[in-house]
Amino acid sequence: MSSKEQMLFNACRQGDLDSVNTLLAEGADVNITDERGFTPLIIASYNGHLSVTKALIDAGANINAQDSAGNTALMGVCFKGYQEIAELLLQHDADINIQHGNGGTALMFATMFGRNDMVKLVLNYGADKNTREFRGLTALDLAVQQGNVEAAEMLQ
Image (cartoon, rainbow, N blue to C red; front, side, top):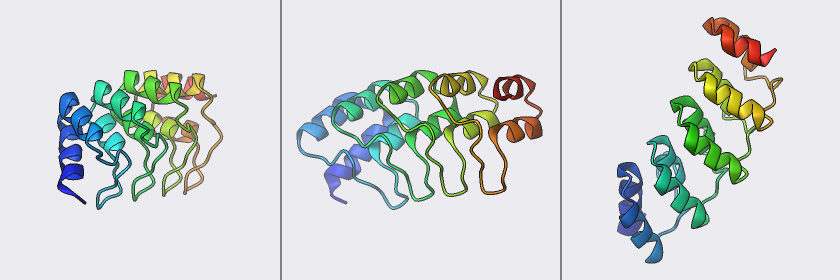
């Protein structure tokens, strides 16, 4: 990885929009991956940087890129509860039903971590309630396990 790409990752972690724009204009690869398979988009969105996430999308970031565990930017923001970023990703055609290495989906992440606003959002965008993860559990099963009555009601 070049120093320019390393600087891009650092700027994405820090939410430094000016540096991100400068580095992209200088030819930094918007879809470069680090040793864990993270892309700048995954890093920026997971750290809650809406403006940087938007700039990366506008620069052609692969919105459905998966890290080495199979996680996408959408999965990360559903876990963290960053609704504005989730809406941005979904408006730019993020695949809502991609499964990570253990079969989890963005809906399952939102459910497991009690992000009920995110559960509602991804359901409104067409998340598949019937997808099963590696143990055979659906998002509803996970909501019940967590005692998340509100999510369970949305998932029935």
